[in-house]
Image (cartoon, rainbow, N blue to C red; front, side, top):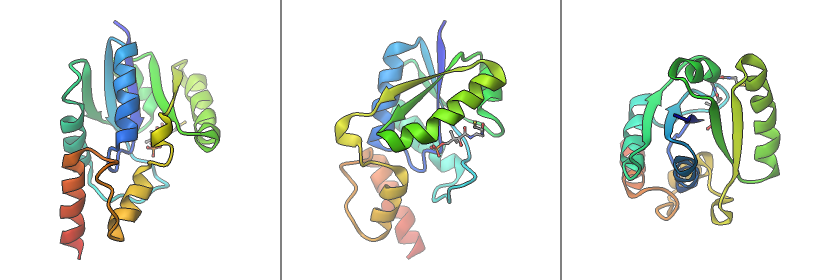
Amino acid sequence: MRRAVCPGSFDPVTNGHLDIIGRAAGLFDEVVVATGVNVSKSRLFDPEERLEMLREAVAPWSNVTVAGFSGLIVDFCRDIGAGAIVKGLRGATDYEYELPMAQMNRHLTGVETVFLPGAVGNAFVSSSLIKEVATLGGDVSALVPAPVAARLAEKLADRA
Ligand code: PNS
């Protein structure tokens, strides 16, 4: 059984994330999408909301599950018996950000990181930009799953 973890903040999950998760599901027997906390980013959705949106979004894949984690991603991988972390790369900036983390994680426990090139059409799609554009009234409905677009609208209306 080859198990991989797709970690991220997923605040919220985007179509770019789902492209990577779906492709990882084709490469591994089982994929666990793990929501963690990136201490350098501000959050819009609380952990339970992010998990709910992810559960809905990964429903099409029978070998994909969703979990939350705290602490080091390498400890989570070890706890669930995952030998690989899968990450998407939109471009060189992602690579420069992700490479040291992949090297650190391998140093810590030997877990491998597999990088998948993001689809060209998703190169500009990030949770941070989605939140900024949605907050300022822009239409992001083509870039996130429909339930996420609805939740974004609801969340931002609550804040108004
Ligand atoms: O979607 P993001 O913000 O790029 O996700 C980053 C995340 C949460 C996957 C990353 O910050 C992480 O793995 N955090 C857990 C803490 C950890 O293991 N830090 C050391 C990484 S080398």
